[in-house]
Length: 307
Ligand SMILES: [Zn+2]
Image (tube, rainbow, N blue to C red):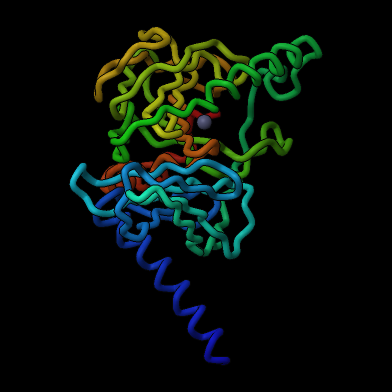
């Protein structure tokens, strides 16, 4: 191998490795440099007055610290499911104390991940092939949802560890390629947790209610803003217990489990969004929960409630 090529590939390997260890050790529990995953990159130490700004494929990226005294800033990148595996760059701009700007590109690699195919039978055919008047409603809702998703609240401390929002059985994983009544539809944008109707749904971390609504596919839904483009969504809710603008504490009840919208049975559909894209919610949770839930999933695959 050519020496320069060797050096470059060595550097890339080192940067990927660093992002893994940082995430596992300090900022979050797991990392996945794959479509639908999260990549954390430690930025070079620069004496700055404010947090550096970071961009990835033209998106504004979260930049945070472990504590107010931490000398390092970390960029936390949500990788869209649609991104092709390959080499990418995070573009960072830092303003020094003297007022000059330092720009740097941090290369990182996104690997391929194969997500499972899932075949779901929906009895209400209208939820798979909506009527013309439904499409008008769906389009209007899409605009409202898109606006809620575009929320960006500057916040120095963003919660990156989440509690499970509801006690229940893991019934559908993020990213699965879905077929409703044998028709291909969008990949699963979140995690499904099956639980009896009426069971409390709790905020997995501190946040603020962006909006609430009752939508054609998602049913009754709550949007929480945790800061710097980290947004969570709770769908198919039976009863919503919060109001737009309300500040929510970690563990506070925000609603109850239901099956409103397109659902095969009572469950919570939970979406986590980062820099305008959905990412795997499991990456923000404690490892123990993930292990338990995947065992349960294997055991009771037949009776899974999901959308
Ligand atoms: Zn779902």
